[in-house]
Length: 303
Image 1: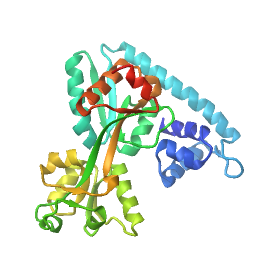
Image 2: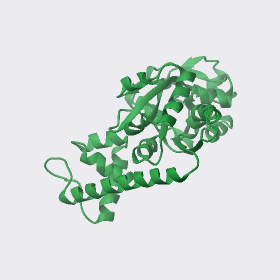
Image 3: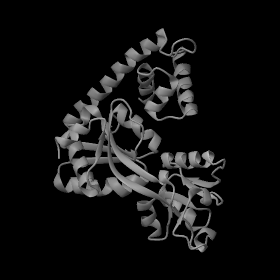
Image 4: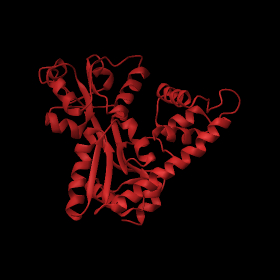
């Protein structure tokens, strides 16, 4: 279904760059997926010269994509009506699911004993597509540029910190804080599900003519932390994750970009949904007032 969202994004954009930003995809990933779509259809769906837009074949593909997405959404609604209780589908990176979704889900289920919740861990870069397509109801992500059709509700700002084995050279220096550029002299362990954080690290390094030396990469914060504890390298992670695995043993980063904001994302059409609003209220209660993009006024109806 995500391929269909790519076709819709292209139809609503005036350039490849705009379409990529709407889906939060890199140029290479966007190009690869577009190529796969065109290869599977056997035709070109996007113009390669002249004004950017869909070809005649692309217009036909768009028509059927809209029909398939509408059919999929109707199917989900009909199936949901057959169940005994409502379900809320939440997606995010494993770290955010544990830190923020699980506590909120616990409170939500206590308030509604007939409710069901399903969670699925995935990379930050996949969350928008899942929510846009209707495969998920709510996503938790580092705040990103606005995507058409989605509402972003900023619910917390959290600093990124450096963690390392207690015998690692960076800890032997007895530092309370460090700049990211100073930290680049060491090897890193990364969590591939934290794509936004990894991207910011690489951007900061490139801006200073340096690179991030990744010694190992994993698919969960837990495995990332275990590798750090075995002195494979240092890691950058949200403070809440660092506290879970390293207690108070972390070093604050001094760079402005390391104060990262996080948002709930959901479809505009689902904003008034009672289950969604209950989840939002619980998150707001934990972290305080939230900001909503683009429909800030809608939140006022539910405060």
